[in-house]
Image (cartoon, rainbow over the protein chains, first blue to last red):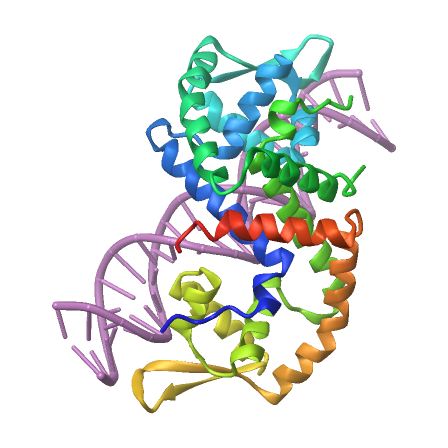
Length: 146
Length: 146
DNA sequence: TATTGTTATACTCTATAACTATA
DNA sequence: TATAGTTATAGAGTATAACAATA
């Protein structure tokens, strides 16, 4: 019944990236099921934790997303009161996004689950190999827009 | 204007995998734009090239997809006459899928474009690093279902 | 009863185009 | 004119549930 996957597919980078991405989504979802947060939402909150106040267009640029996607992302987090928008007094076209106190608390609550997810995801690799993988992927993607 | 991405995100594996996957899709699409084929369709055709006759359920298992997804995938390729379904005489519940002559020709036509895409995608890495990356990803995903 | 495949339906993620409000 | 953000719409990609045919 089981079909042996030929090397022509098993060693294709697109296949490997798709599967790895899929596994990552699955592991993250399982570990954070109690928190009602998606991976990219968590990523946005981390970004706001580091930068405190960002325009939506800056978020889009940093995360490699379209501005419309960021609108929906911020909408979803604002509904949970984890982030807040306000007009930038210096440029009233722009919306400044920041974590709320509730958002900071949520982030703190969720982090341990994310650490566990990371552990499970990376369990097959040694510390050194994990760094190697990250390094290779960084170099693979930074050619992109530059 | 440009926002510096903090390491807390830039070095997160989920982020890196998402970006790498995104870049791979983009590069593949650009190089195969003349052929009207998606990456996972190409992957399925490679699988059929290696195995000649497979049940849809075997395809689903091999590629890590749902059976319904395979139904739609085969539908799309059958519309272009690149694959054909027929009932398996030995088990009339099952559909055997195989490349058609036109499918084999299409695959041969598309392959050079895919080779170019692969070259562009992997340009930032040396041969040795490419093998390393593949090896690390294989080990990351083979824990999955096992 | 279990399995193969199909259909209907829906959800996630993302993007394009047209719009508004500012600059 | 150009930019920031929103809305409507749509397209991938994938999945769940109910179903028909077959084992």
